[in-house]
Image 1 (cartoon, rainbow, N blue to C red):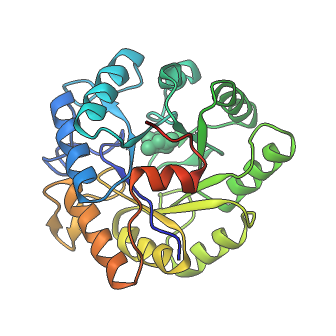
Image 2: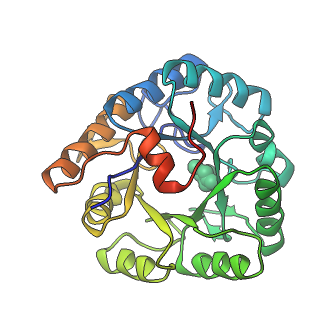
Length: 275
Ligand code: KMH
Ligand code: ZN
């Protein structure tokens, strides 16, 4: 089977130090967490950034500083900034990190409830605009889908020329407002994408390790990290993102999947190789 790409979502926009004191806010903390994940086997860092007090921000200057510091500590890692940002941010605010021309960035393909009164807004016209702006810069979208209808939206936008093949999906399973994280849900999502597409799976909270185990067995790729889950096991907080990545590596090895290096991940995803 193809080697396994592990993405580490080290920070997110919603999780805080109250959930786990190791959640990174400062540049140094982000570098520490990115390096722990990279050293453990992650080839992609899915990146959100914060102000030092933990406030989520999409500020291009803050992204630049964080990306350069992470790249210095993890030279060949693929950095994938979020264009989702945090609930309530404007489109222009969210799009700022693409001005740094990252290799990849997320493209969220639908609106959904996000717990309580929160709504994560991604209208069709927004998605078209984000996709066009990313394509103009040669940025590969990781198509984030929180429900099956968002796959259908991405496929429609592909047919209309907004998203190029081969498409790369991230199934985010178990958001409070999106699809759940049961085995049948992942099978349904997997069956709904084109044969030439690549995919990764992220399970939120208790769904993280069941979903990635299924993903590994099914030939997909996986995402773990504090953005999705702060526990290493029931009631045991992870001390670092690296611990979550190391657990994914152990599961993969037991199941016979080798881990992709960043350069192998670039080949699998069709990204340009880096010298
Ligand atoms: N923070 C969520 C509202 C992404 O990174 O593209 C959206 C999110 C998706 O995390
Ligand atoms: Zn994210």
